[in-house]
Length: 409
Image 1 (cartoon, rainbow, N blue to C red):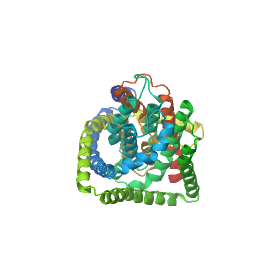
Image 2: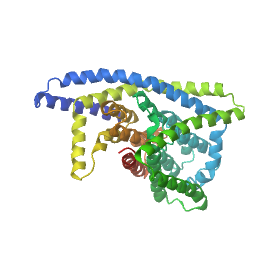
Image 3: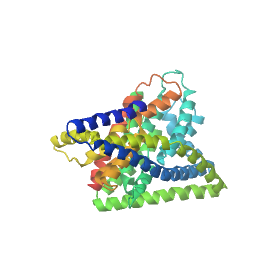
Image 4: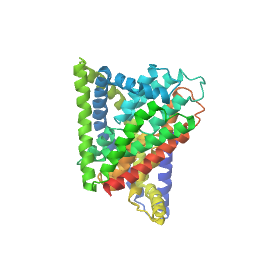
């Protein structure tokens, strides 16, 4: 899948460049494409430096949380809910702890760190699967919730914005939180319909009703604020939550007599190992996206979408942020490249860049997740997993666009 996508970027760029040269008489198009190749290779290294620090930092803190028992406590708290949503998983099964750790890593926006944990969780669920090549209900629910991008603290998106010079990298915190809530809710409801889960069970309602009331009240409060106040509140809550999570991990770790420094270094070492493997993928995708933009092919595609949106009488400012959404279902590295490229060409705090950042934080690489997670355990019949995951993905994109108009337009 990634081979075809990556090669396709270059082939489309080549066709577009030949058309501009032979039809449009633009002989300088090839010089622009070559210049873009080297510029994007340089940019990928600059981004990678900060990505090293981000993954190393947060996997260090996550290791403290794990040793302090916070992850285990979360597994116990969520145990009654999992018992209703995944009835075929026995209470106390190792899969529940791994699922909780995966959700914790996803919640912190650590996509690359969450994947190895998620694969372990999928293998643990496979042990309970009566059909070795057909996805079980529990596996489908776990995958769809992963594909819905359950992100509460999108630190990697903050990192990309900081690297591109954003004065306030956390300004997109609330928009991402609201959009990812929509995608996760749609993903859960779609699976519940297909699997006939009893969401009206008293235990399930005891988890969801307080959260729904809190979210509804919070959105009602946000509706009373001006755009400037919304952006200011998003910044405050993003920074406060970020630092609050760090202090929570450290304080609980100290109270549990965890050697926090040593635990941090142990987790940070794992983070370094995860991060160092990402540079080749980042270089590959950024270079491909740079060539696509320099050839004029990407702008041509966006013009088509822009004309269609304009024909419907809608505002077209969000269209420049759509490249991230178009490639996100296939490749996380391609989506990151599109986000960075949008911030570079449009400005880090431009409306399209804010839309792209919100989409990046509230959607997931659906086809990639399906291929990796199910492929790792030999699943061939995925049943309703694709439809539910894509519905969650689409809902996240639409919600991200609407929320950005609410906050930033």
